[in-house]
Length: 88
Image (cartoon, rainbow, N blue to C red; front, side, top):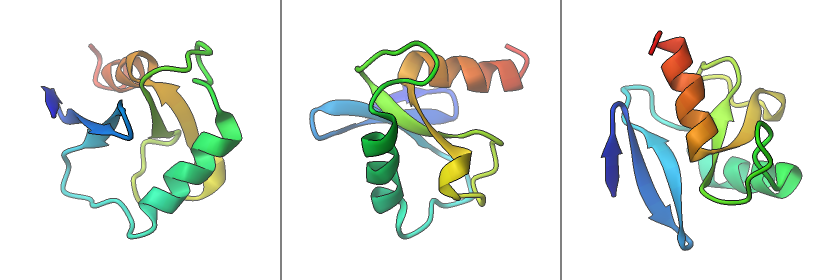
């Protein structure tokens, strides 16, 4: 596990994926949602990378787990989205 601000990166199936260390837990079906988004998007929707992919909530609301609110991003683009939100 690699720590990074509010995120930590967990090695899953040979790749690091972002997991958020926040008080709002991911839903019980998160693994199924994640797999669906991975199969749908295939690559990072920002830069086209195929490495270090993870699912991002477009509206930053961890309670909104509708598929149209979830997008696949690489760890670099995911980090940029969260840093932009935090004014970094």
